[in-house]
Image 1 (cartoon, rainbow over the protein chains, first blue to last red):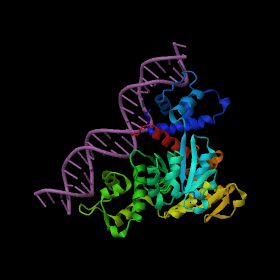
Image 2 (tube, each protein chain N blue to C red):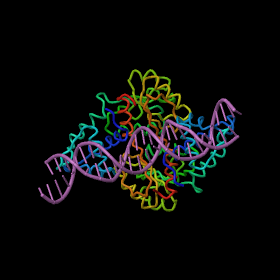
Image 3 (cartoon, rainbow over the protein chains, first blue to last red):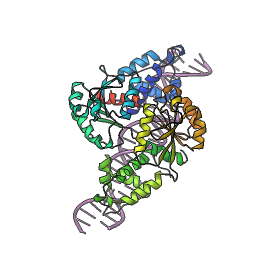
Image 4 (cartoon, rainbow over the protein chains, first blue to last red):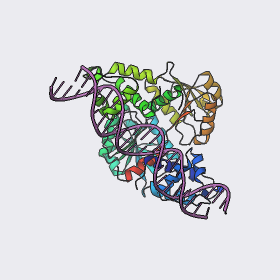
Length: 207
Length: 207
DNA sequence: TAGATTGTTAATCGATTAACAATC
DNA sequence: TAGATTGTTAATCGATTAACAATC
């Protein structure tokens, strides 16, 4: 199915919110209610749900169970995704822990680090291997998404290597611009740029 | 000055890249060269620089020193920004370390945590206080940007409290939707949603 | 002059929102 | 029926890109 990236992001947020939604609040939810919980407009919500073929009830709104089912059918794959964290330093371990606390279809199957002492050890419940074994383990474990939490210096080299090994999605925490083939889905988390953006907009009067 | 958010983000990236640019490569850079280094188009680069009043030389391109000067004048404030990290767990400490490794105008002046044992201790070189003292220290230290790395449960309460104390910019790592007044500049880093977005687009054939 | 570049407007693209018909 | 909602198209907004004049 061909859906806009922004819609996918919102679908993910609808699902996460509704999964925790108290059962006592009823089986149905109105678009304006869901919108208010996420600071969106009711039209946005209805449009998103329309795009994935969901329809609501004019009296009661949208059936939450159906909503959860159809969103999951849209977003998830049967097997889920196998993730590798490359760079098991502070940030890598924190991100690992963060992901594992959430119930998702994302299975962290390996961590990699240059530190020999971490070899074959289990960190945050994830088996950790030496960086030299990336190609080998990524293939064997069918990793399709890599999270890059390495040093800036090695980021591009590691990206090249994980891509060569079969990874097609990358979440890049390194603040380094990565050059990747256009068939790779790359998402950057550039903390420094984000802070500078915030800094600029809080000094200027806001729109 | 009124500049689009995307332009600010790119200016931040131009600067970071050019700061590390080897001196031997010359004092000038062409828009197409800068564009290639960041996977942008030359027009995008020229337009961004035009918006901040920079002009280049038809033979040599843009003067790197001037470029760095004008970008800094645009983005930075004289005093820089004072940051607080709220939640000094794994993620908070990792983010603290990450920011301190980069040379920026962002000064991390305080960390906060519920853990009594961290009270008055210095973590990653940052003085750490108990969460009950947020209001007090944010005011005294003139913190204007808060980074939220707390538990999801306390995220909204903490956001309310830092805003009440004078913070106007928030970088939110908690994956929880925050309800903030429109004059607050909020930027979300939702790791779960990002992974689900990547997951969706690597299963579908890419555009 | 020819060629490569900058500078800038107009067209296009993607996403949001306004408007409103249809339904219960 | 009146009122509140859903469903969907058309208009608008923000950002990128195409086109091209100006300059060295």
